[in-house]
Image (tube, rainbow, N blue to C red; front, side):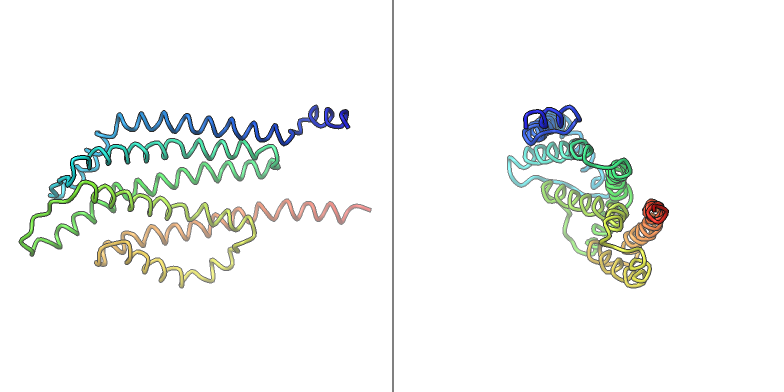
Length: 260
């Protein structure tokens, strides 16, 4: 029995205690990086909050804080979000590195690409919200209140919370191509279903756009159009990855037929 255990370890197979030790070490690395990133974010929080407030100030907003600790709370909130954004790629990498010994070469490549594109699309969603959607929404919402003789003095906490909600929504929305590719590779979703449901999905997308945007056609189109493009990109990517998935299966079946 002892010889079998030694042989497995020599062949590179890790014991349960070895897996738990590796998992613990990876979690410690993640926690340490998150704590360091949080302190770095706290040091940069004032600049980040000022940059976010400048978006509103450029549209004519005036900001106030309603409690003595409100600005301090926002600094800590921004530092936590900053740490999460910095730590998220590391968390994905550590999870991939932990699982990779049990994956085939093609699976390793697929999950690595999924992690990379997931991070890229998430940041693209945040960038789209920051550069395009939020300035337009702030302008529209302020313009709607011009007929009312009330000055816009917005709480800093409510304003930052509003921006963070929009950022999260569009970071998730832009993950749609990655999620659909993963689901099709797992056999849960089929490309044929996505193609047949295209018209229905366009209607659903416009309904979602109407929910998350002010009640005007321009902002709904600004949100719905990227979502439709993401849906079409998802169909294309799922079709491409589906072809690559079929090839190994066809080759293995041909090899099986050729065996005597």
